Structures are given as C-alpha cells and as structure tokens.
Length: 241
Image 1 (spheres, rainbow, N blue to C red):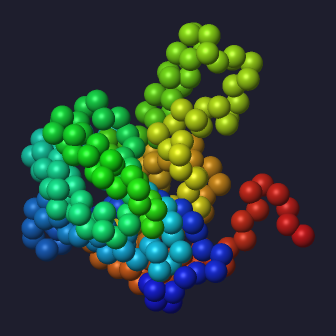
Image 2 (image 1 turned 60 degrees about the vertical axis):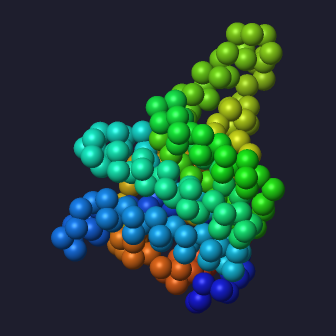
C-alpha cells in the first residue's frame, strides 16, 4: 500500500508515541538531540501523508510530564527545537491546510514557547485538511487530574449538579474535548507500553507497536499500519454476529 491511497475503513484519528530518537542517534555515534532533530523532520512527512490516507486527525506525543527527568542539556535542547519547529513550519502548515492544537499543561513551559504555541493555534484555526494535535508537557494522569479539578470547581461554584456528572461530563473538561477519540495508537521503537498517553481517550483504540525507530518511520510504513487497521474487527464490547 502506498501513502497516497485512501484506506476504506481506515482510522479517522491516529495518535503516535514517537519513540526512538535517542537510540537512532546513538547508533550513529551522534548526540541524542541529533535524533530529535531527525524526528522533527519525520513529523513533516507523516503529517503530509495524512490527507491521502484519509486520516483527518493526527495526535503526536512530543514531550511528556515525565521527560523533565532527562538531563538539563537534553530538555533545554528539546525546548529550543520546539520553538524552532513552530517558527520554521508555521507558514507551511498554514498553506497545507493543517490546523494545529496543543494539549498538556503549559504552566511549566517557557513563556516564549507558549506565545509561539498560541500564535500557531490562532494562525491555523481556519484550516481543516488535517487536525494536528501536539502533546507537549502532557501526561494522561495529569490531564485527568486537571480536568477533575476544573469539574470540582464548577460543582463548588454551583454551576454543575454533581448528580449529573458522568463520563461524558468529565470528557468535556479534558484537553482533547474538541477532538474525537483516537481510533489507532501507534508506538515506534519496539516498546510495548502506552507511557501515560491519552489514557482516557484510548479506551477502545486499536494499538500497533512497531520496532521501527521514529526517525526511520516512513509514510509507507504508516500506510501499511493503517491498512492493517482497516482489516481489524472492532466490537466496542459487543458481540458481532
């Protein structure tokens, strides 16, 4: 299957845990940041492949709430990379019809980076070819905790009846409240865990774990995974006759 072939029954929303940048660089005797730079270029290719494959929503895991534990040099380098990515890709994303959103807790991020994130969201707000969501300083448990806090504040203020609270109510307070749940979650690099990514939203998602390191994850590999997804039978808890 090629990356320009729409897939019948393919996923409308794909989420990707982009793993393996550091190992990719180390295999080449280069610093980890070199791998992150290569990974950023790969994002461009995958975003551009989405319309041809029928993927309208793409969510990528760029930086987790746990990634602050990495060395100061790597974290600082990643933050610089994020700023440069936004500055360099803004006009291309706008011209290609990509709408960009960011999810995660922005409170710990550099003010300049947050300003760039806000500007890119505003700049691309009228686009609808691909909805690209970038999870930055994001953690699934953190997101649910922040959502629960906001919900509790609404109850305390008398604007929300606690007797009416159900899973639909809580979903409205999540970072992803305007997005459909992911149909397919992909993790690269051979690791078979979800690493606190979209815990609530992925309750019924299909998963694909590939040994390919993220900088080597081509649009054709992406297309093959989407093709396999289309062949799966999704029951959502029901028994299909």
